[in-house]
Length: 200
Ligand SMILES: N[C@@H](CCC(=O)N[C@@H](CS)C(=O)NCC(=O)O)C(=O)O
Image (tube, rainbow, N blue to C red; front, side, top):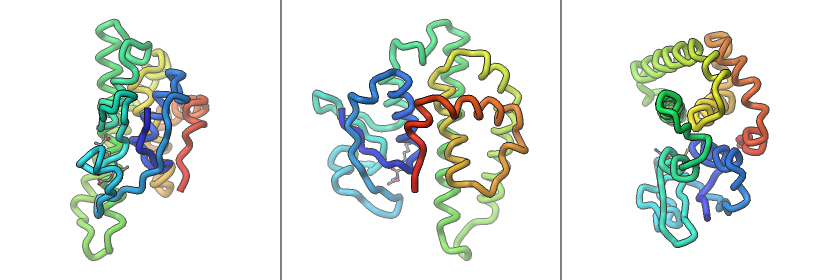
């Protein structure tokens, strides 16, 4: 399989952490792809007209985009997607929350990269409020995260928090969510996380 990849993308990282957790990372050939909302990468767009990474090209040439779909495709039938209904729902919900938080952070960062005069203060304030609310919910669930087997949900939340550390160093999220920070300190030591640390 070929993955259109970047060491900076938190969506790509989620796919690679999933692959490491599944022990199949060596089956994925990573192709460096530089993409931006403000431009088009012709190589990526040949495979995915939306110009997004991650984009995964399977052995038979078929193409999968969207990190959530790619992770679910790779992890189907594995322990990362629990079979038992309540555990499965919890894992999928966390997967959605981790993905949604990542989405918010990437949009937030893109807004902050615009010239100061063009940035929207109400949007920036709303993202800060949504981040705080999400951290508060996850902090309340930290004990459950810790007690349950690693799932796609753990991976998604771990990668979102890793992106906070990478791009939002000035936000002291650990002060807002100390129990979640404790869970993350352990999760971040997993080989899958250490092998995929973002780099600028
Ligand atoms: N919803 C997509 C988001 C992926 C995404 O936005 N990736 C960024 C890189 S972090 C990208 O490809 N940006 C290029 C663009 O928006 O044209 C997913 O989950 O895979």
